Image (cartoon, rainbow, N blue to C red; front, side, top):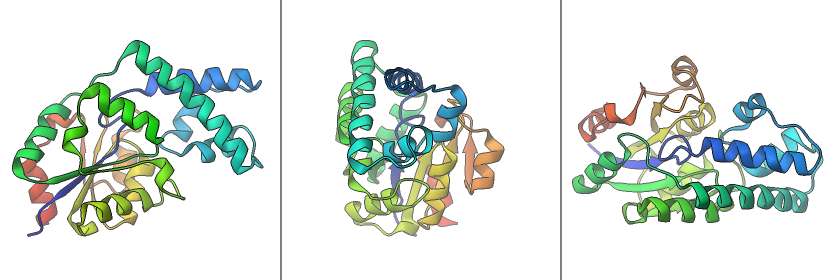
Length: 223
């Protein structure tokens, strides 16, 4: 049986900074004279910034405009995290330590830019657990394309079939499955209901990562 490797999504899985993201997008949208609703947020969650900009604000936006607007939104987001802090979601601290004690490799695979992940991993003191960090800056195609997770597997030096992705979004589940990986989806923050995550291909859906264990992951990979 291959040794499992764990690929973590961040927002909604490792931590819950959804409200900071929503406020940052809403503030940015107001700056450029656009609306940004909860429905917009739900529809775009897990996407890379260029995809969000083109979907919601300017379908013909150049790469330069996407980069400029995306960076402004992230400035607003990082300021919110620094002022308000962030905590690991239930079960995460135990699982990180349990996977590490078992000797499993772990990586982050997120659509977020590097600056956000450095901040979050620093604030939560979790950098020590990850052998690789793949950001939205490292890939050309965002979730549901599997590039972010395949890049994580490659950096860890493991085959995709040995990887288990921990996700909370439909696009992330679809990315894991497209990459030939197992996937555990968590509904704790409520971005997507369990039935949609199952329909997207999640092997296991849990209400909280407190329900998960290394033994359960090992059994999933063993098939």
